[in-house]
Structures are given as structure tokens and as C-alpha cells.
Length: 363
Ligand SMILES: NC(=O)c1ccc[n+]([C@@H]2O[C@H](COP(=O)([O-])OP(=O)(O)OC[C@H]3O[C@@H](n4cnc5c(N)ncnc54)[C@H](O)[C@@H]3O)[C@@H](O)[C@H]2O)c1
Ligand SMILES: [Zn+2]
Ligand SMILES: [Zn+2]
Image (cartoon, rainbow, N blue to C red):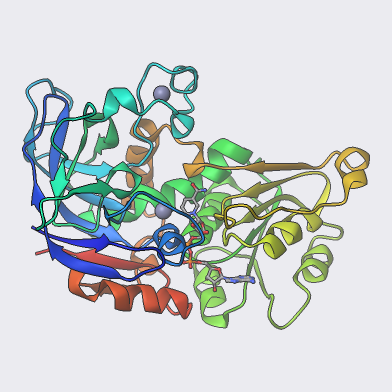
């Protein structure tokens, strides 16, 4: 099968013919139908983060179950599924508390050391699966705890977006920050993740939803998806603008880019007792600076959100329902559909900030 492989960091993706094994006892083989381009892969390609190489990249995928291992009862061939990188062991303290995205016990959901790799390149070398999924490939072989079954009415190209971006953005609002109806919200960065957070805020009943971006085209999409106000941070002081719109700051801010500067803006945009949630992947090793006195004098809070603090087998089917009920806009989120061969072009569009979300479709 064909897959997009990262062989060096920094580096571009290379389309290779790779072999994929049969499912072991608790594994599921999925025929990929849609795979979204999330910015996280790009951080690794650009060298801001490190991962095991060579790796089949991609982690925002949906498809149809092709085959299952002998112990898998949750899904069967023909089922429609979304994959999620929050592969849960079900045994660690985080899983037991429902915090699947923090599971730190990969052994029970991985192949034992020394066994055949799930995917192999033409030279016979084992390939890592980025985020334990490897969704930029015609097939994904994953542990059963990496999939959720969904309704068949859901178009699988748009379902793929729920695999990371939508769950991360909506989850940051619903689960991490738990935005209250009537509150005031700002989302910095109107890409796939930010637009999902913004829609989450709209669905949660926020009274003001402010989108900040540096591209007017992104802000137009943000308005379409429910932003009540937009601010172009390249043309005006974003913090001053948000404070003015809200008379003094927001209750909740979300950073959906991954820059030190915008995380610090997210903090500065808060009113006393506000919460800033960092979603963006700040480059590894980067330190964030915030004025210490504001932490206690204003009782502000800074926190992170890993994959929207998801419980994805509960959350993703709900997000599918929200889409099918017309409450979650995903058709408008997909700005480009491409083939796997054009993946580097897809990432160029992201670098140039021209794509809202690009989705690879497989025949
Ligand atoms: N926390 C998690 O679990 C998680 C999950 C998925 C993605 N992420 C991260 O979320 C971030 C966003 O991902 P994405 O796929 O939506 O990216 P994207 O590239 O599609 O969107 C980023 C947006 O930020 C805007 N932008 C860039 N610089 C800006 C600035 N200085 N001020 C305002 N806007 C600016 C761009 O125009 C773009 O619209 C990435 O860092 C990604 O790695 C985190
Ligand atoms: Zn992602
Ligand atoms: Zn666990």
C-alpha cells in the first residue's frame, strides 16, 4: 500500500510502497477513506518536535474496518470508524479517571518488543506509526482502543476531522475549560483547531466569541462559523482590541497556534478569574512568561488541553450527531481535497496559511 513517510527531521514526506501486517489478536485493520492535515505533523517535519523515524505520518483519519484480530469484539469488518491517538490502556490512573488523552502506559496497546512491526518499508525496515496511527496511508493497523465506531450516514472525509482537530477544539471548550453559557470567549488562531474551539464556544452558548487571526480570509470563515467579533492581529493590537470588545477581558481564552507570543496574549486577554487554555503545540523547550502577580491578585488560570481532554468513544459519536443535526459546521471547514501524492503541496498550503483544512481522500 502507499503511505507518506517521514525519513528525516527536518524533512518532507515521501510517498512509499509499504507493507502492512495482518491484525494481531487485539488489532484492527482500517481502510482509510479520509485523512486530514493537522498542523501537529508539520511541527515534526519542521524540526520543532522529535519523533521516532522512519514514520508513517498522519493522525486524523477515518475509514472502514477491513479485518479484525481474533479477540476484537468491539468492531467488525464493514464498520465505519474514526481513529484517535488517545489510545487508552484502560489500566493506568489516568484512564481509570477518564483522562484517556493522558494515558502514559502504551505497552498493553502496543506489539510486544521483538515482534514483527505493523508496517515495513521496501528495505524491510520497521516503520513507526506517528501518534500510534499513521493515517497518511491507504490502510491503518491499530490497536482496537484506537478506534470508535460511528453512524454510517456520516461522510467519512469529514469524519476524519473529528479524529483530531474537531475533538481537540470542542473538547478544549466542553471538557477542559468547561465554558459556561453566557460567558465571553476568545480563540487565537482560526485554523482547523481554532475554528472547532470557536464552534464549541458557540454551541456552549457563549455570549461573545471573538476570533483572532492574521489572515482576513480565516476571519471570514470564523464569522461564518459563529464568531461574533473578529480581530486581525497583524493589523491591530489583539490584546487591546479584545479588552475593548469585552470591557476588560474574556472569561475564557484559547490559544490554537503554538507560539509563545500568542500564549502570552491569551493570558493578557483574560479578566480576573479567567482561564487561558493552551491547545497549540508550543515548540519543545520554549518557556512562557506571564506576570507572576496576576496569578494570585487576579486569580487567573493557565492550563493546557491535550486532545481536548477527550473520552473519545463518548465524544466523537456526539460530534457526529452535532454535524448531522446541522449544529457543527464541517463542510465549510474543508477548503481543499487532495490525493496522497499531493501531500507536500497540502502542507505548503498550511505553511502559507491558505488552507482552512485540507483532507486527503482515498479511492
Ligand atoms: N493540544 C492538542 O492536543 C493538539 C491537537 C491538535 C493540534 N494541536 C496544535 O494546535 C495548533 C493549531 O493546529 P491547526 O491544525 O489548527 O493549525 P493551522 O495552521 O491550520 O492554524 C493556525 C492558524 O493560526 C493563524 N496564525 C498564525 N500565526 C498567528 C498569529 N501570530 N496570530 C494570530 N493567528 C495566527 C494562522 O493564520 C492559522 O489560521 C498547532 O500547534 C497544532 O500542533 C494541538
Ligand atoms: Zn492533530
Ligand atoms: Zn492508560
